[in-house]
Image (tube, rainbow over the protein chains, first blue to last red):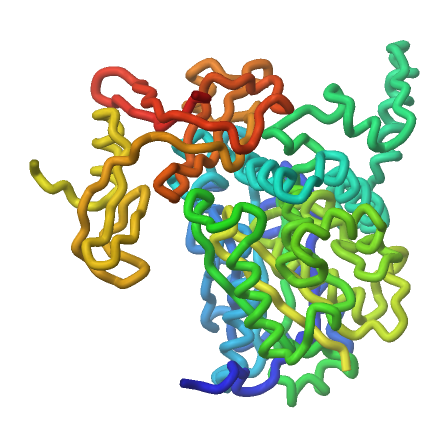
Length: 421
Length: 138
């Protein structure tokens, strides 16, 4: 019928920035996006006049619900002085800004625009936990909601299916959590930039100062097994398996490949993009993988001509610890049923063969849903350019990195592959 | 018998009558629960209603300590978690449902593959009656 998919012309990333992620009573969406935008401008090696930006694509899931304000495209366009240039909002739940990125790539690849700003923002912490849970549930399937499922519940159910099929257990999920915290400890932008060991020490100090019984956890896993420290949220998802409620913004600057040299001598080339859609829990053929991620991966690998083994580092959508294990299998980094073993063997650590979520992931960096997709790209930008500081991966000839996003309970998934040449 | 439209409204109405119903494509026989008005196998649009026998086994579950407002109203909380699950029916399709008759506070005791039978939980008073699909171990 038709040949393999291709981009009409090449697209490159020439700048990337993010706000600090966290819960900020005194910072709103505009303030956070301005913070991300300023950092992005500072990363464009040869400078950029914002007036040269042709269009904005902005990912936002549901500020409509969280802060009772919709229509964020023009608000951010005005904030940055981009009006009357077009501003388009994209919505794909937790993958919203991954979709903004993809639309920005298409807009340049088609030849229509040369310079496009893509980003995302979400402001979640102004609502109670119950309200945020309710807001997020709008991205689940209606059948799941009525059956009492929450987001952690859906991933908890997939975890029980995975455990039953492959013999993994809660102990294996803890390896993901411990690794995420170790990485986030080295990321000043992370919401929780502390290791599990740091948290244990803080608790012990606090107990000492208050004259309370001093906890006797021997190691991180014993802390995570302690129901007082790590209560169940939706079995087997416990508090430390779940990403937090966050505010934040992030953005990256895309330009036509042939123009990249005017902005930097070390651009990142967009070599693979893929996106898929997926069914609700009841309609999945198998509860241990995401069909949308597998489809997105196939598309991105085909476009890039790369194989999973060529991807040297990746940020994956670890909204819950089990999700990280499922994604590294769906992306082909490890065989189905072997992801948890790879994590246990340390292969996904910062100094492992395939570092995953060097930023600390959604679990520790934070998950302001609309900002997450481009936030993941900020980490790959830093790593591939050797600018990740203390958490720089020690891989020689680091050239290829990827980001994978998931929206809802697997309804929208994407894979993006970037290459430094 | 009147033919109800093949949609979620009819599905819910059947639940309120203690019936778990799916749609079966007249052309290719593909079964969907909840119903579909378009067959995604052959794209036929002539459907029949088919009642499920209501027997299945547990394919996945979670025990939820922090639930949505309507579950909290039923008295569920951190100390009294409830169980939701995915049930594979004898007819070969899956549904999501509440799981009754298991101990949510001891999730280690709940086993994938447990045989289950359907039940219908009627909740809500007056103008807003709701029926929740549930299953219970045989």
